[in-house]
Length: 90
Ligand SMILES: [Zn+2]
Picture (cartoon, rainbow, N blue to C red):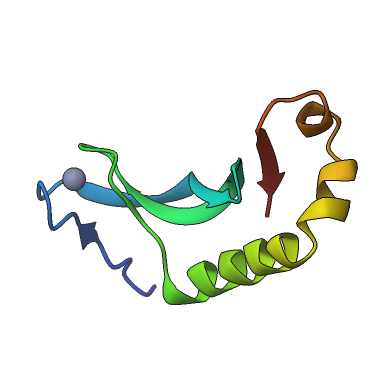
C-alpha cells in the first residue's frame, strides 16, 4: 500500500481534498464561467488549488472560445437573450 500524500492548505493549514471548482473569465463584456474544473479544495477555507496542467487545459478552452466568440455566442441562447453570461464545462 502506498500512502496517500496529505495536502495542507498554506492559508489556514486545513486539509486539501480533490474536488471541482469554477473559474470565471471575462471576454469582451461577457462573463464566461468554466464549470467542473478539477481542483484541490481546502475543506476549511474553500480555497481552491489548480494544477498547472488543468490551468493549461482551461486556458486553451477559453482561448478557443475567445477566438471565435461570435459564433460561440450563437450557440448560447442565454447570451442572445441578453444575459451576458455563459457557462462551459470541462
Ligand atoms: Zn484553507
